[in-house]
Length: 224
Image (tube, rainbow, N blue to C red; front, side, top):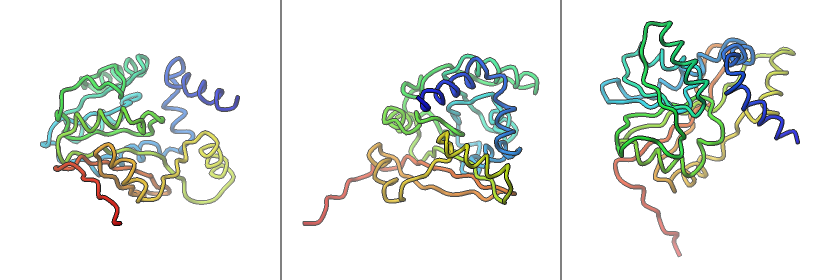
């Protein structure tokens, strides 16, 4: 019952109540949300590498950051409401973005077209095998997928403790498996994985970096 309520709440936040997404994000992060989002850009290749795809673009803040940094980008989201909000935000900033409505399980892109993928605070779709297969298909060899999984507030105080409890309750404080498990799980989809933690002022961001290798990942048979 509780899980259904949370799923309903997230559905409303991404659709009918999407207008409140920015305010909610700032509130639950004590203003750190944008810094957590931008931490993903530390692992992107230079803008000259080619097109960057943002999955689940939300209200478009990271698209503005990518434009400011000189990247050519394409933004995809399943929510039509988010698409409208993001395009309106870019127009207010004097920018024109490239937006597509679609599902990560079926990316409307040709093979090896994308120089990098970025995704901040995704739901569970990012771990589905169909998503990983699609990412492996559209990425150029050597291209990264830069995912911000969670942010953590540092310091003490009742408000910080309450927010951390809410993160755990809603599943937003994602715990990664051991590094060896990461290699095995994502290696099956042909992707290499690492899980860096980016330290920021008063907080940190847990990232997951997936990379399509230049050569296929070979399975090593166990020694008898």
